[in-house]
Image 1 (cartoon, helix red, strand yellow):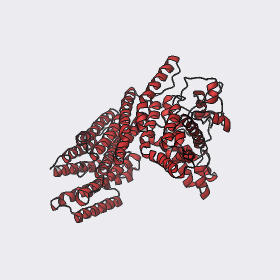
Image 2 (cartoon, helix red, strand yellow):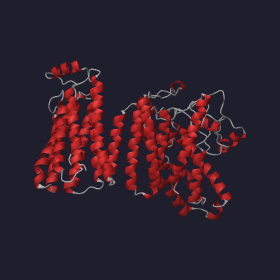
Image 3 (cartoon, rainbow, N blue to C red):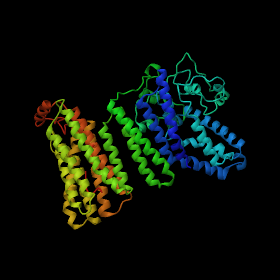
Image 4 (cartoon, rainbow, N blue to C red):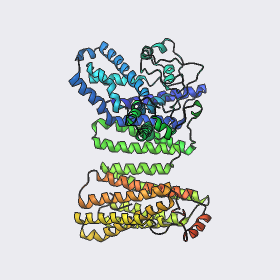
Length: 614
């Protein structure tokens, strides 16, 4: 049985214990759970385990190589005896202590370990909150075990034991345990470790044994007079699993890039967390830490969003369990595709809980990811479901959002009709291109969809306001068409494809020109979406008419759904931030003789179709 399968079998036990802790907390009126935080923490644990499918080879592979070729002593019989297993567990715990300690004393190691500390709650779900990048450097600290001849099997088992032990110490429902606290890592000892209080900072690193901290001077007893405050001093303030893993790395990269001294560029990564070169601190000052700034991150969630989060969380758990159960017997490319689907789903759930996107936007993203994966993996019937479903969700999203916005007097029906027609054309194209012999109807459907997008992007603007963008997109279109012509484009398709290339180049030119006028984020998203359309169609045409591309459906569909998502999101954001309908009409009139105003696309200030996508 693989380590991933063991984690799958252990997961129900974790969830039952979490439920018990939650019930005890409610009964004692000391609940330590919040839905979004718990979902975020467990989601990061899922991401840690799914990403480990790709990084486990680094940790176990390097360990095995060192063991096989450099071990100073080989005594497998001893290590497989009862005393050997016990010594190996203690040995591992000592190595873990130093990894854990250096994770707090070296910035690059803290960048990985910080994920585990970001939660401002302290409960059993926090135990599951783990890094996805720790294996990149963490293996170094276990090399002594390989040199001592501890067999890889023994190493893997004691590592799992050490990890599982640490689950139960993440709770506030268990108090002091007397003599146990003096020898072992306990809830009391580990609460201190997670606290940001000055008195508690960087203490109690032990995994199973706390005696290492007593031996090496890093032990601190929990003080009943000073309540632990949890989190990190650089607050995350996000439910985004990608940002949770990247936050500290991004800060280090920023400081390293801007440091003038070359030695400082390296020191940023090696010095203790928080160290910054003097010149960087001067140019990019940060406020000093204060306990008063430790406000709990808690964006509001409606009951509908809470229900959505629970259902999505259950679906994610099921998907991750299925992925982990078969990961060791599945080709790497297939694992990568399913991992990407799960990652999209996790990001979307975090974004919904944070209020960055709506529930329908999340479903559109997730359906697009599933359509892409099922196409690449040959699950035809599922692909026939998710591909049209994605655009159906987009149409529903646009209709509901437009209705909501109209209730606030910010509605322009013509823009809605144009967006709906563009999405409906894309939906028709998707359906036609899934059927044999319907390439031309599919091409025409997407051609019409792009014409509607051109008209939509024209709303409130003059035609092609940025001549450079027009020249660039037309130039790219001509080059692409020449490439297809010389690569074997059938004579019967030369005229239709030429018209298609022209229209999509004009669509991109109109979107980019509009963004140069409005100069806001939603308009930029729309322009990026148009650019992704050009990429998607170029990849598709190359694959269909010139040379087969590896994993073509992945690249074609991923860029296609990125295009649709960016355009829909940008349009909705721009519509929501537009002036009232009366102001729009006035602004449109004024814009004819002066600088164009942000009149609809829905007038955006604001956000994201195609040849043959089967």
